[in-house]
Length: 343
Image (spheres, rainbow, N blue to C red):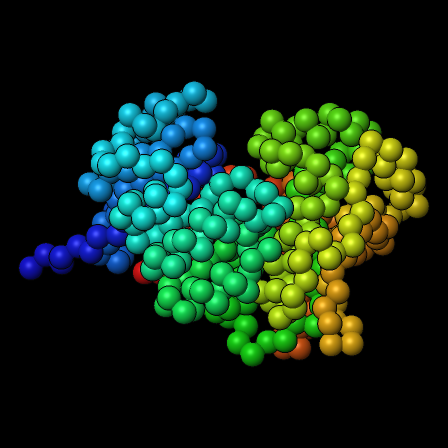
């Protein structure tokens, strides 16, 4: 007797590079979902700011949408249902079990936080790669998820697809994190390590733009806001602190940093922008700062687009997580791994 398949409906807010990579990954793993979990899935809604909104309770033709996608593509042609004039309407009408929030980063957390709040309140699980709402509304959204008995998951907000929160949640029971430090921004790390080899600041920055690594507004990378948002999330989710991004001391980088980079190399040291958090008098302090590191420091060896996070714990001593030259496919996998944890 054949197993009866369960139906799972997904909706996306945002359909940029990460969302499209995730959709392709879902398609590639469709048979795996059926074999492993007896689950057949449909994407019943996609909402964007520039490309319109589309809902179909029977499932959107996602492969056709991906094949035909261009910068000027419109999703409105695929809509099958009542008029949907806002993202709030979309969340209420999309018929999803899981909402994937993948809109652009805004340091205020909005409008993504409102999207997530509306979805959780409606009883949807929410998975996001948007660090803004997680950093600025972590406690409120986590509390609402518990009250509604749904999940609020965010593995992809700090190190793309590298397991950070799932690792801590599932494999480090009763562990206390004393401090942490890391290199959490690929754009600035690439610039610093390219300048060690004589590249110009602008050439290195332009490469990260073309690769889709830099934020839409590169000042978020260069001025340290991206790292501060990630550090804020780590402090709140792993260390029990309540530090918001604007409460974290930041040091930015600009074109004149090349002189300091090359001077450090001459001293057989390396200049890196380090995000760190530590406990002090019952509080957790966060800083994003330029540090000149000894050559044998594990953070000094992190080059290019790679990231590292080092946790100082009471059970495993120091534990390092390294992600080597991530891409949008790794971020898409974070969405996938969070989704699998719901099965």
